[in-house]
Length: 389
Image (cartoon, rainbow, N blue to C red):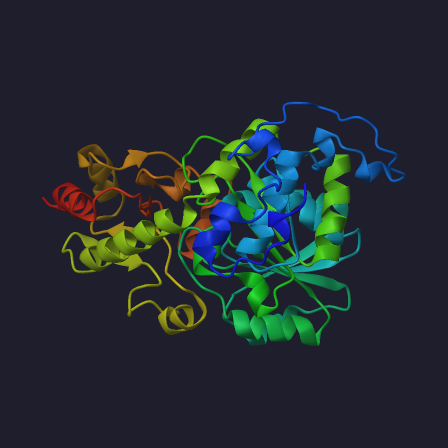
């Protein structure tokens, strides 16, 4: 399957539709068909990892996605996985061995936090949490055994943005591999490879698919590193089913138009909430009051559809909001066309200890919102009603 995947499309809105598509078209099909075959006829391959087999992530549905995802972030290569956590865990296990040390941003998605704190130590891998904007602490925690620096481009759920430029320079100076979870911004708003970050990780369940109907992940970055992750993934078995590949490919084709609405509506909602008397605090990098607003505006093309906020009145006010709201769906995921609301302390970050959550600022009353593509006017009216006495 060669042809269009070798064409260098310049603009993102074209890449999401055309990059990676097979040429010539398979039996003339405009949409890449689902190759629901576990194995393919042997073609003389001498390397086990080159055999065409679903678990080896190299069926036509996989290779189409790999080329498309790499093009979206202007990276050399990409790999899809069975989930975002499959992408994260496989990548960490590829490059970290017993005795190695990891520097990791302190405010993380709960699943990643649990992996780092619970599973890595049992494998003899050590770690230190550091603030994403405190370069002095990075130097203090650095060890001769430190191998990698792990970030989130926008942290879950507080929407913090690390000092990426300083972090990249620090990692280069000390020979560290850089890994970043780029799920919240999506390639529309931030492309890590353009800034010299080695590997970008995604939960494709979220914005890349955009329709809340599959679970998938991705690893994007330097070709030789992605190939190492692929070989580890082939053994661990976290491959993506061809039908899920098909749905992800379909979802990506509307990414640009969806993200435009996500960005615009989240900005309007964040500005409204920041002035609402029933709201104590809003976390959104698009607000001028956000501590990393200037940094985000310089490095990113948009501020994402994610925000979190604290209502006035603590946990009782949070409960009242969920009782009164109508438009947002109470669900723990994000990135779909529908607006979703959740309390991270009881969902995405429930695995963290209450002490760790409080230390990071993830209170029991914090509400995380994934702003969908509904009318922003309807959203604002619903939030106003639900937050008003």
